[in-house]
Length: 165
Image (cartoon, rainbow, N blue to C red; front, top):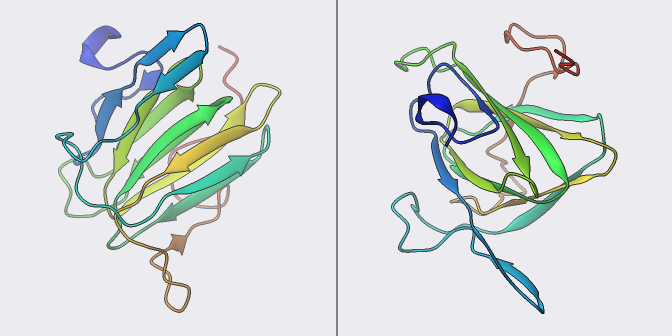
């Protein structure tokens, strides 16, 4: 755990209301390794909708978007990504908070993203980042529960540029 009780790779004054983190554990042996991501008996598990893979190319921002109904469970299984959340919910006790997670092969985490919380991601380093999501709802092609905000032209207090400090 990093200082403040948050796992390493997490930049946040406090976690956005409803966001939960599960530190993942690699179980290696001479054949390779196994990493459990989400279990039906986890305290953070709600329900199953579907599982999908999203690949982000280095330096490209995929986001912002949010859902009105769906909860997301994000894990980066290959490469490293910066996953950023913004609480734009006006009635939330953490309205206006930003949480930044640097996660992936070198920092395996699963994060729960509740409905209404804007989120986006960007692969960091020189290789694509592979995100596995196990959302609570299946994707509805005829009426998607996905609402987009431009990644750069918006009122969100976050800059996707590389932080070299």
